[in-house]
Image 1 (tube, rainbow, N blue to C red):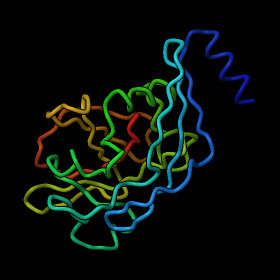
Image 2 (image 1 turned 90 degrees about the vertical axis):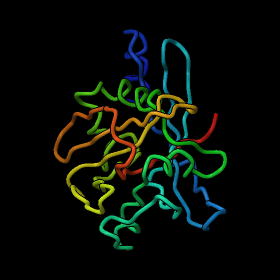
Image 3 (image 1 turned 90 degrees about the horizontal axis):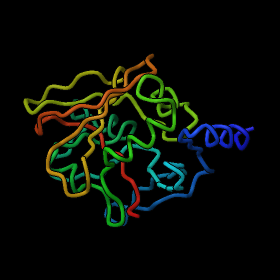
Image 4 (image 1 turned 180 degrees about the vertical axis):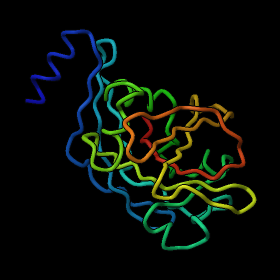
Amino acid sequence: MKTIITFLLSMMGLSSAFAQELAGVFYDPRDRQEYETVILEFEIDGTNLVREWFTTNLNFEKEGSFCYKNYQEYCNSYGRLYAWTAAMDACPTGWHLSTQEEWDMLTTSYGGVQFAAAEIKEGGDSGLEIKMSGFGEQDGSYIDIGVNGYYWNTADLNAKAPGLITFHTGEEYLSSDQINQTHRNSVRCVKDY
């Protein structure tokens, strides 16, 4: 059935995506944590593009990273929250902080900004399992765990200005914004290509 849907969407000139089986498990040599990954294939303007994503939030401890309310249990369940300067180089070698272009591929392929979140969040068809991990402020306050998910992104791999993708519990839409560098948000890593 998915093949038929993909064919029909491509015939209509729309982009499509489908999740493959889990690509495997990536073992981070820095701290020996493991991350399951998923391969997503996109058709954009007649070109097939493949991206491999972590299916969980990064949980690598480094300067500028924090556990929600400083409780290790939250890091174990939701990953760490990163200040912007830490987020830019937090992903392991061979992986990078997700870019706006990569989020745009997901958004376009799963129904646009008004509907894509349902397929990208936990339980959605993409396999990405985005969590509502809240965020932190520089003053040490934390809010929104279990309610909203805030994810750093960058315009491109060399960009210095922080971007933010936001997911909301019970909502199909997502939003994309620019935000202050001092916020503490989640990181999803994408394999270099």
